Amino acid sequence: MKPRLSPESIIAAVARDMDMNGSSDWSPVAEGEESQAFAVRFGDDEYIVRINRSADGFHKDGFCYRRFASPKLPIPEIAAIGRLDDEYAYCVSRRAPGITVQDTSPAELPSVAGAVARVMEAIAGADMTGTERYGPFNAQGIGRFASWRDYMMSILDTNVYDWEAVMPILDRKRIARYMQPLEAFAPRCPEVRRLVHGDFGSNNLLTDGGRITGVIDWSEALFGDPLYDVANIFYWRTWLDCMEVQARYFERQHPEIARHAEALRSYQLRIGLDVIYQSAAAGDMRFLEWAMARCGAVAGS
Image 1 (spheres, rainbow, N blue to C red):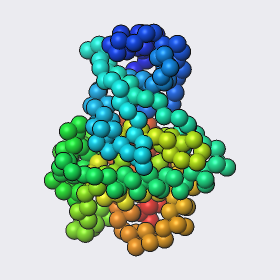
Image 2: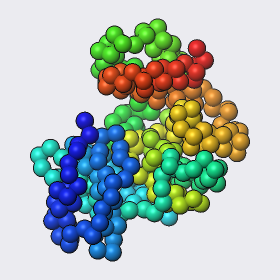
Image 3: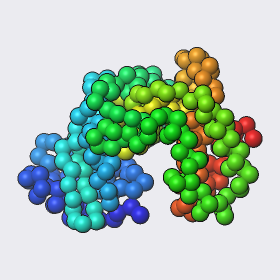
Image 4: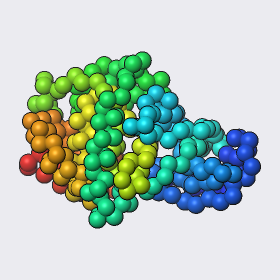
């Protein structure tokens, strides 16, 4: 459940820990699924303060800023990470200018699509020196899996995903149809190891209308095939206008991706099965029904 703490108590604790004067103003900003977020001004500097029960994602953001930020990959500086109490952690990052790509007007989205693609190239081209393994990684840059194939197939592993626990509200035959292409893809799964954002293309990208000014929230980042980020855009294209515009950009400007149709389909199904599982576990029937229908369209069933 998302924390609901008063902004005044949060900002007072952060200002105390960072040895700053009290904030001159604050305002709520777009929040994540599990976190509160505020824009805060301390003196002449603007920050984003986020609150979550776990600090793990914040420390991962810090690692990605220190390790991968560059002019071509603008990751906001993590200024401080701390705890408000035994239950809640906070993260303070420099505020990047602009609005999210998701909040960009439909008329302006085509002008941003090229910048999104260039940032995606910068992510895929990041220097991986000093990192290890595949899949989701920790704040030390160590992936959870021995291979990219292992990560891909972990969605089928009952030790990782307790499918039987959520199966009573699912259609077992349909889930099996979505899993079958992944099993068939396994022998041909490419062992590519590059940086992958893992949740790319909408509310985790900030833009000033012509360029990407910030790539935020690296909690889902992976080491693996960068085509996974493209697949994420394709999977969500019917849910968000910004994803549809970006998907069309890739289809038009990079027709060569059609050669990777099997991988794109498998990656979309892997993403979709995770959404199905999480939605079923949370009892979110509306989102679950959409995800099931989307996987059906991707699988061609």
